[in-house]
Length: 205
Image (cartoon, rainbow, N blue to C red; front, side):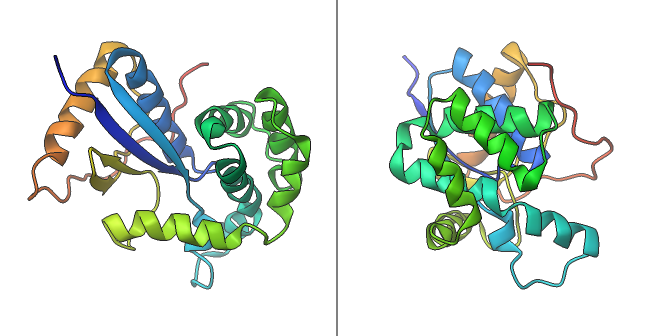
C-alpha cells in the first residue's frame, strides 16, 4: 500500500498561474492518496517597497484584499481555506469578477462557502497584515526569496511551481504529480525551467 503524500500549497488568490496549478492539485486529490494543506500568500506583501513596472505595481496595489481575507479565513475557519480559495478563484479567474478591488468577488465567495459576510472587512484593513507577513515568511524560508507563487512542499521538500497551462486532468494529472514527487524526493534537485509559450489557460469548471 502506497504511503499518503502531503502537499502544502501557498497561494495568492489573484495569481492566474497559481490558480491553474491549484486546480491540478485539486484533480490529483481525486485519484491519489494525498493530504493538502492550503496556506495564504500575498504577492502584494512580497512586492511591497519594490521598484516595479507601473502596470504591475497597480495590480499589486489592488490585490491586497483577497490575500487578507484568505488569511483571516485561515485563522478563524482553517478547515475551509481550500474551499474558500476554490470559490474565490472561480469568481476571479473564471467569472472575471475583479471589480471594487475584488470586494464583489470576496462577497460572492464568502456566501458560496457560507462564511460570515463580515470577513470581507478584513480585506480593507491592516488587521491581518502581520499574519500575511508570517505566512509569506514560512514559505520563503523553504524556497528562498526570489520566487512568487505557487510554492509547494511535497512531503516536506519545497519548491516554486510547477508552472503549467492548462492544468492536466484525470490520470495525466496523477502522472505529473508522481513525477513531481519523484523529483522532490531527490535532495540535489533544485530547478527545471523553460520559457513560457502560452498565457494562462483555464479549464472549464
